[in-house]
Image (cartoon, rainbow, N blue to C red; front, side, top):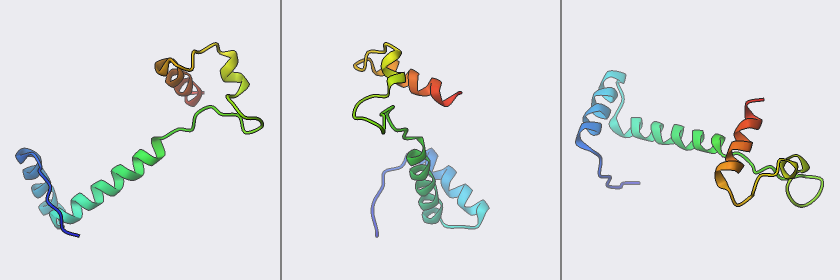
Length: 84
């Protein structure tokens, strides 16, 4: 599919130079970069702490006392769980 993109001049020059050094086209470099970015973003989406046993939040989350309306606190709870 053909499309038109508006890309910053400096960024385009960098992409064009990188493509030349790698021996590929600008199009193939942009396609590969987009695929990598999309795959990376899919991996970074974490499920909410939902219990699979019963509807609602996991007991561990509820026991933490975090206000579910406080996005920062919920994300902090999820991040802390990843680091264990």
